[in-house]
Image (cartoon, rainbow, N blue to C red; front, side, top):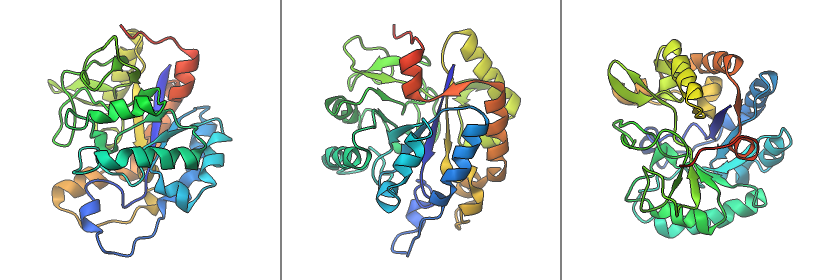
Length: 281
């Protein structure tokens, strides 16, 4: 069994877009795509964890019931899609956790850092998550990219601590679910969704999932809400590189994910922890 997380964000939340929308009148639009995403999961008999940017629940509180009543799980993705290693964010994080707990009636037990921004300068987040009754995190990518990643991190789920982000810590209280990676053209790279779902040959991703299954490891996959609903995603003027990362093949995301969901079994983090054994050694 593999695991699917949906990073439920607005069009103005991605890290590469945020610098271009300051002081502008922004209105949410991707939020209207929730039913399309729920229908995709329903018709493919798939449960997922929705890592939600908390401010979207303030805009549309009914999202909580829509997600939970369809047997999916709520996860935390910060209140405003703030990178964990942003200056001064440590002092705000507990308040955000408390606010999200109120918005979700304490239903959230899992966290994902925006743009996988968990690193040793933001390792404090693991302690705060544990202190606030969180069970797991999924913010580690065992590959190095220009934006994130820890090349030497374990690929299978492991107990994580603020002192040991990459390897099993017997004293860790949070379970880390690293994102799926693979070897491509001789290099270890992410294969678990997002830009890589849109860009890598689908066969490469499928073979990576097969390899994980052979080794009794869950392939942890992710996708952004705005990638599944490109009709609600405005095109912002970006540099050629950032434009490529943000928009390349975005119109193919839905189809590509559906092909994967039809070929492999996926569930939410919560359901995986409740019903499938995890080797944490």
